[in-house]
Image 1: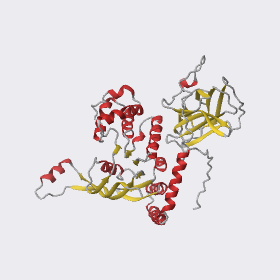
Image 2 (image 1 turned 90 degrees about the vertical axis):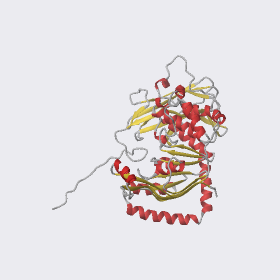
Image 3 (image 1 turned 60 degrees about the vertical axis):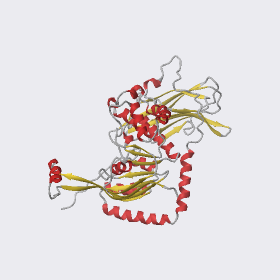
Image 4 (image 1 turned 45 degrees about the vertical axis):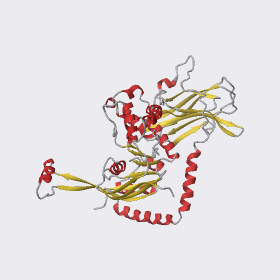
Length: 466
């Protein structure tokens, strides 16, 4: 079994609350040490372990002690009672700006924080280019961080936290700041860290992140640990707390504990299942043959490009063997106007222009819409749709338009495009552009879930007989 990298043993954190500021002084100077405060238990007897390489989430309502336990683990706070053991180098992203000196430049803060983490100047010199590339804030790194916007601040802080090869990464709601492209890049980087065996401890209110990234979840409520276990089970318990269904919560807790006892007798089955889940998660990353064949920056001659009117990801992930190039693209609203904004319920189009650098027997054109965590929500291609696509030779080009109704809920999404095909029975990528465009869906009515079923509602009122 993996060793424990974090051990939290019976942690209690007590704050003294005073009705008036003068009461603190009166209590201190009182000859009989008369108490003038009330004890507030931010945490009460919380215990749990985190194993090496695990991704563990901590969830709970506001005021349940989630951030407090992270601050105690990182050494920002001292517990009133109990003991913490940490066997690894921590990189923490807690409150925005924690650990940064506002009067220092971005570069100076990078080196200062690196020193605090135990890295030498030579080691930080080697890591600096990667940190700056990830943060992507340009010459602002040479300015005092007090001049930064909140977005630039979090870009630099997150770039530092995840590019110092931490053994333990601790994140507290940090990804709620920043544009959709940067958030997607951060989630992708967290996936890479997980694959490398980094232990991740995260606090979030985003249950989608909990379900995708966490192997195990700890549920807190009012400073006490309610339960820990599989993400799905803990999210269900959390929803009952949110709804105030404490009777149902107790029943569900007993059922969950019983299930965990049963599972404890079949650990070998669980370990086998865990291995298969990891394998299926990695399967989607196969076939990434980077070639740099078709740069998005390449321009077409003579005509204005659609993409010049779009918000394009400056760090788009592209690859392929170069036989085709998606050289232009755009999103068009119902009136045919190029835009990244689409109204929920309206018809919109995704348009791609492709030129060919070699002969291809049967090209396939695709698009996919994903959320910022990388989950595929919808998409299609010319093969699925039965479109008439003929073989091409070098120098030919295609213009493809996908037209559909926007039924996704209001929010931020990412569009990917590709030109692929089959050669000798093998799926081949000619040019693929991941997370190329952002699309913002504007809605005045959001329902539950990812998309709207467009329900038609009818009601009939019956008055009671008096």
